[in-house]
Length: 140
Length: 145
Image 1 (cartoon, rainbow over the protein chains, first blue to last red):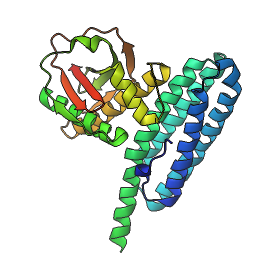
Image 2 (image 1 turned 120 degrees about the vertical axis):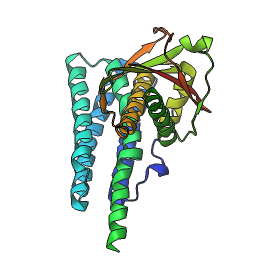
Image 3 (image 1 turned 180 degrees about the horizontal axis):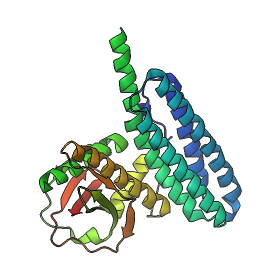
């Protein structure tokens, strides 16, 4: 399982969404790396790719709303990181369609996305939790 | 300044290995390049701004496979596009982390997307090579500016 308890940042809404995001990426990677030949799995790879992409947007939107709600000072910086990743995924997806659904691009996308997500959740998103915790402590 | 640059990349490598892989890592002495290091993955990250040049990371194939196994929880026997892309992103993350440390030293620069080469880069002759050691293997790096 890709999700690890150590990724929990202590904000229930965000933690649940992260868990779901990891599940969707894990599902995508598992389908992509299954032993079946590429031609047989293109359809399901495409479906899981769309399923995962949808949730990336859902999660980023909700997380950004939470950041605005708590007045997170690095909101613009964090949003830019999200926007860049969405742009990257969309750009690779477009290229994938235009080039006729080649496996190599999907393997590259999955590898990068996995490493990016682990770092983003473990490092960048932890800063949101640190800020929220400091803010709550100051309000007590 | 060079010492500060190396320290930044070294500390960033240790931080990222701990954060992403839960691996304890430390800078260790490298007397000479291992003869088998040609059998590795080179991650080349361009630097621009106050520093112009590139940082090169060298990771043996065995270490790369171990790292991506830890990251994904999946088994890998060989270096393929998935492993190469994931390990390239790790190099990108380390470099981004190093930039923040360089910024604290008033060195402002940016990084370019990683280029990956396998078995096809000359080992450095004049640059000093630094090594970070973990139980999963070593990451060597050098900076050309």
